[in-house]
Length: 134
Image (tube, rainbow, N blue to C red; front, side, top):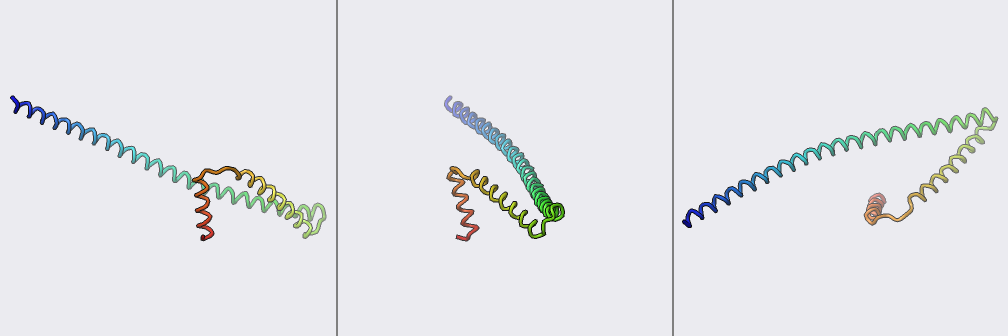
């Protein structure tokens, strides 16, 4: 009788191992599928971010070109419309540019002030050191 009980315990352990193996294989399969989907999503996001960065760069370039053209138009208007000399017109536009630049730098400086997270501070320090070669 004890031999029969021993065989039943061995058979039960074999069935348990098979079930555990199947569950492990199922979980591994689900995880592989999840990883494949995550990699596909990451690839799509990478393409989206690169495309967005390129379009932002093109937009910024167009804004710069439009700004230069508007400054040229302002110089021409001052020179032709108000009968100012070329030097006076260019100096007036440069003064306006410097005032606006100072205003933007002041506001931007105030907006970037503030408490930073330790990770942000460490990242900024590493980047600054890498750029300055220290």
